[in-house]
Length: 118
Image 1 (cartoon, one colour):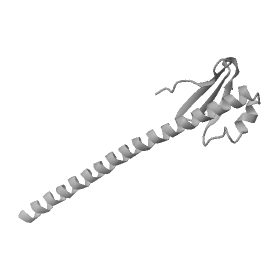
Image 2 (cartoon, one colour):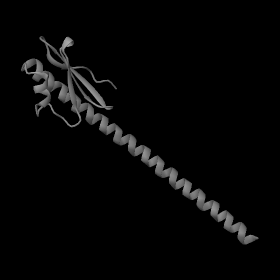
Image 3 (tube, rainbow, N blue to C red):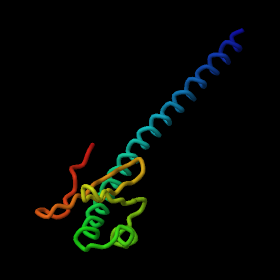
Image 4 (cartoon, rainbow, N blue to C red):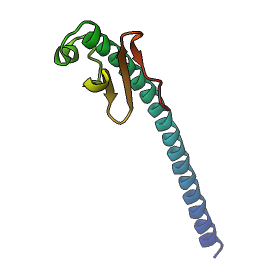
């Protein structure tokens, strides 16, 4: 009887050890994911801001069409798309699910970025 009780408690101990290791791996993966997500979001925000600013300058200062600005290598950024809001004279640059930035044209100030939203 002593040997079967020892074997059963040894099995429970290794099972607990396995669950603790799996829990540790899960926590590490969640922390790494959060760190990577924040870096991706910050990078996307900076790329969207640059594309919006350059797109606004291209469209409203240079007077080029939006299609020409969207194809310009200075505006094109990885994963960033730009659109125009002609009514408010703004260029909106976005990275899907990560960031969006707007640059608005005014005769007094030129192309100004809207404040970043957190």
